[in-house]
Length: 372
Ligand code: PLP
Image (tube, rainbow, N blue to C red; front, side, top):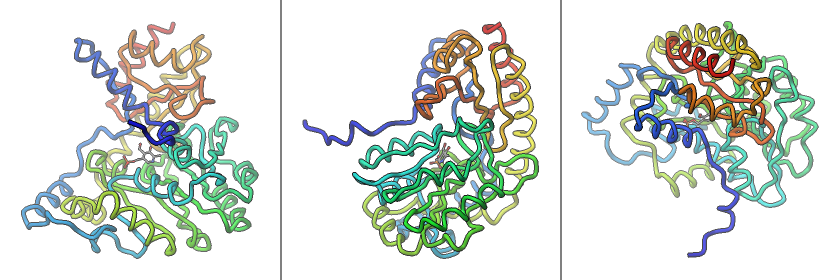
């Protein structure tokens, strides 16, 4: 068999590999605390489950429109997707080819770089480590743009760093982007409902002047604890809609009909689950931030959004990869090395605090024991 050359350039998301390693240890009788996966540890809201079951009972089991059922995708230009990821895949595929450049956050969600490389475009990293709090620096980003730049990918709040960039900086960036009308923007806002300290989401929807080249990625996975449902939405410029719908038709035809009724129930229903999650995440954030900084050799910035902490662990005498391995094998705690999100993040690891306070406390205690 001769495989396509570009497959050699396709990366992956190693959090799933770490999950497999942890599961293997569990099958051998080891007790593992899972702080590696990026998914809320709450049940999907009851009213969402009920609405989905009802949709099936009502006979919504057939094909539906490739861009989603009409009730689920008001207003215009929304496309319902099977998760957040397909929007990334399609957006990058629409712009990526040899000679093109695509700017992306580094460290960042690994699929950005993987897909850019796959298309043959040049992946141009925004070095997020340069800023002490990992936040978006508008000047730095604008300086990376040239005539070959086709797409700028941003993710706020950020995975893996937990950084939150506030509206002032996003305003400056949006203003600067006006000078580069050839650059499309993919704003990954999947953590838009998980922002701490009562701050508001500085969404790119605030800039109508960019709508003709703005793609906003969001979804139900993180906000409503629905990662396994595979359900996302994105808003596209008018001129791209027909191409994206073609991708949908060629690829997945349409999103599961019944769960789109659940999706409507989530959007229309009470925000109890989100509020409860944020209450818990707020306590866990404090616990993990204080606990990590209390361990000799570990420095952690206070996360501003999402449910991740991204401490520097090089002070323990280990790099991120060695540290994560030791945590899994000696402390029974699964975490992800920083390099899973970008080659430069050698000194870091990512902790997900989507776990109970008891589990976080126990994990911190176990790690402290093996490090000190
Ligand atoms: N974007 C970011 C920044 C993420 O962290 C994730 C998932 O971890 C996604 C998108 C993908 O979300 P989904 O599981 O809905 O495909």
